[in-house]
Structure formats: C-alpha cells, structure tokens
Image 1 (cartoon, chains in turn purple, yellow):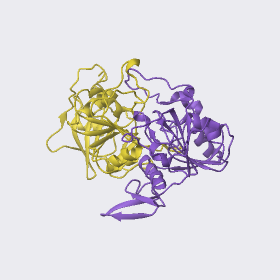
Image 2 (image 1 turned 90 degrees about the horizontal axis):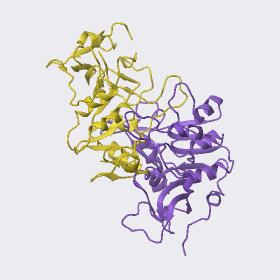
Image 3 (image 1 turned 180 degrees about the vertical axis):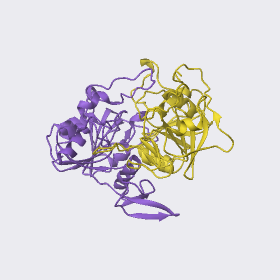
Image 4 (image 1 turned 180 degrees about the horizontal axis):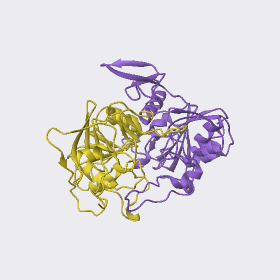
Length: 251
Length: 237
C-alpha cells in the first residue's frame, strides 16, 4: 500500500547532505512557509547549501519585521514567534549560494544574513524576478530545458544570458532548475501525496513541488480522501509527507 | 531639494496619491498593487468590480480585514495585509499568477520607485551601495503589465525623476504615468507631459523639483481633484 507519510520532520530530511541544492516553497510575509521542515533542516547543521526561494533575505532575527509596513491599515497580525524562514539557514552560515527574488532586506542601514555573507565573501547570490524563478522551477518539474521570457532583457538580471528575438522583442533564456530536494507546505494531503492548499498559502508551493529529485511536504492534516477535482498537486510529485508542527505553522 | 519649492500650496499625502491613482481605475480592470503607497489604493475600492491582483496568487479579493474576527491567516496580500474573500475571488499558484502578468492580462500595475527617467525607465530593486537586491515580482510586472503607473513623492526626495537613471534598472521604457504629490505627469516618447497639478502649483513650481523638462499638456493643465472627503489626503498648506 502506498503511504508516503513519514513520522517526523527530522526523519523526512535525514538524507539532505551538505552541498545540496534545495528549493523551498512559500513567500515570506504571506502564509505557506514550510517552517517545520526548515527548522528540521537547520538542525542538521549542514554547510554549503544552495537555496532556491522566493524570499531569503531575512533571517529569524528579522521575523518580527515581516510585513511591518502598516500604511493605513486597521489591523495587521504579528507574525508568530515560531516561524522559521528560509533565511534562517543563511543566518546560521549554512548557505553558500542563494537563487532568490528578495536577497536583501532593502534597508540602507542594515544587512540581512545573505547580504552579510556577501560582504564576508562566502555567499553568492543569483537575483531573479519571481515570474522567471517560477518558470525555471516549473521547467525542472516538467522536464524542459528552459524558457524564453521577455522579462529582464536589457537589465542586470538578463546580463550574460542567451537572448533571442520573438516578434522583434528580445527574450532572455532562463534555464531549468532541478534541485536535489523540494521543500513545501500544503493544507491537506492523502497518503498518495495528493495536495490541496489554503487560499494564499498556495503561492509557490505547487510550483516548487516536483521540481526536486525528492519532494517533501509538511501539511496540516493527512486525510483519507481528497476530491480529485480539487487536487492541485498530484501525488507523483510528492515523495514524503510530514505533519506541520502547529507551533511553527504559518497558515 | 531646493528652497524654491512652493511656499504655501498644499500637496498630496501618500494616501492622497493613492486616491488620485485609484480614480483612474475602471470597472473590470485587473490591477496589481505594489508595496507601499500603491497598496493604499485598496482603501478606495469597496464594492466596485475592480479585480485587485496580488502576485503570490490571489485575484479579486475583497477589502482589508478590519477586526481580528475577519482575519483568515491564510488570506493576505503580498504585502501581508489580511483581506477578506468576495465572490469571484480566485487563488492560484505563483506560476499561474505570473502567466497572468507576463501574458499581458493585467490592465495596470501600480509600483513604487527609487527613480524614474524621462524615457520611462524604472529603478526600484537595488539601493545604492547595496550588495543584494529585492526585485520580487516588480520586473515581470514592469515589463508586461499593459500600463505601469508609478506613485512618487517628489517633494522631499531629490533625484527621483531624472534624465538618466543612476541606479540599476528594473525595466526600460515601461512607465506610462507618474502620480506625484504635486500632480500627474504622463511619459510619452521621452516627453514628460504635465496633465494635472495640485491647486496652487504652477508648471514653474513643478519644474524646480526635477531636472526633467516638463511640458504642459496641449489641452492645458487641469487641477487635481480627489473624490473623497477623508482628512488625510492633503498636507497642510
């Protein structure tokens, strides 16, 4: 009987080694960060990781400043103390390279963990826009070599990349990403690894799912049955399922 | 900033700039709001069928949550404001959301900027002296939305609207309109056309705030009018 449920986060990430390339789902500031798995990976004390994530500019020390932009808002909940962002791995010195859309905390007076690493000389950053990052991961999952996008042509982001013109418009070749591991979060799974997501917590998780040679998901619940018409991520993309630690969960 | 700024006329606050921008929205528009002043535009959208797009994958959400009871922890804008659902709302993953953007299905994106050039070049992801950047979805939006509107405060910020960018460019020739604290400027083929000015401001007053040559609109310069009686739209004169 197929059953992809693993008993603990620590067991689910036990074969991630130093030097691995890992893609993470989630988008800091909004729900859907695989916080339980990030904490478990951090506890392995790895080195020289290449991380791929939408946002990795902030470490745990910066957790309280997520989304502190208040503008004219009547109510913004504080982030839960338990949240472990991808940038936590950089904060611990476990990251050698980041492929990401937010590598900075965009503060002229302070550095985030990746910025500090670049200044020390031991971290490399490949900055890329969100749409292009998603397509590179989607290509990885879908077995494509890459994709031409108009986005980035003529800018620092497109510099050095192959350019082709389509209908007279320059397009940049963005090559597929095929990480060793894909780490994501979802709302519910069944034992086959079929997944559904809650609202905005869907975010990059279905894109990252299946991009890695091994995909590990943390979920709020494992259920017996999911409506096939509502499943977002099909089970074959998913290898291991663990329950989220509710204390660490950003829904 | 020079001491030559207008001595007595009021200007638009951040909320006032957002009010003016939102007055350009039309029913059925699909609009992405960037972080900062652009997100304040959502304060002025209540029941109209304007589909607000948040690039992490929510389209057509309702207003911001006002009380803790209304907060669903899994439903927020990309800027983390909790929002409420409404009929017609869609959630999707990032790849779908950016297909919507890149495929030209957004009527407009409203963005903040560090700098904009007279040609409409946009810089908004790499601070001077930084070793890393924060580009997020801005590059896809700036390249591919049908219309790019920048919210910009000209008054306290020197070197924001410039002839040539000093900073790393997000996208070339993409900005269609600047909505500023002193008026509305359209960028057409490298020409900065002043369409509206805040009452009390002259073209000469505005010109002192930028090195870019400003040209009066052929039909004349209208006064900025704001359709709201909120008391936080204007600075004191």
